Image 1 (tube, one colour):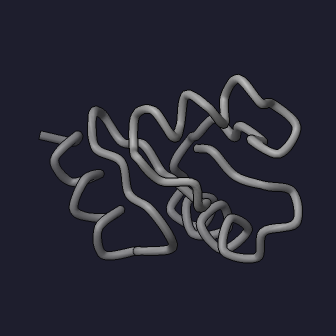
Image 2 (cartoon, rainbow, N blue to C red):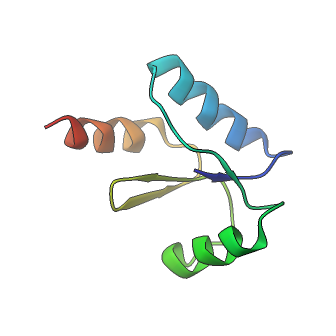
Image 3 (cartoon, rainbow, N blue to C red):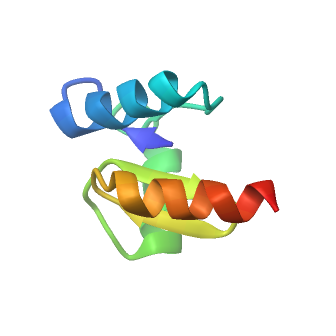
Amino acid sequence: MPSRYSCPWCTKVKEYLDGKGTAYENVDVQANREAAMEMVKKTGQMGVPVTQIGEKYIVGYNPEAIDAELAKQDK
């Protein structure tokens, strides 16, 4: 999950995933320029958070979209 250390919405996504018991990898795109460029290349977005679930990218804090994609992964 690309995020930034100082991003409050990134914190909300991480707290949401933690609350669901969902494992994730956090990538600080503020500290990792290569990861930041890869995120922009794949999503066309410069904003964070970006949550990747499978092949789907969810930009911003969107619990409904996160839940929908997680449900697809469980099938």
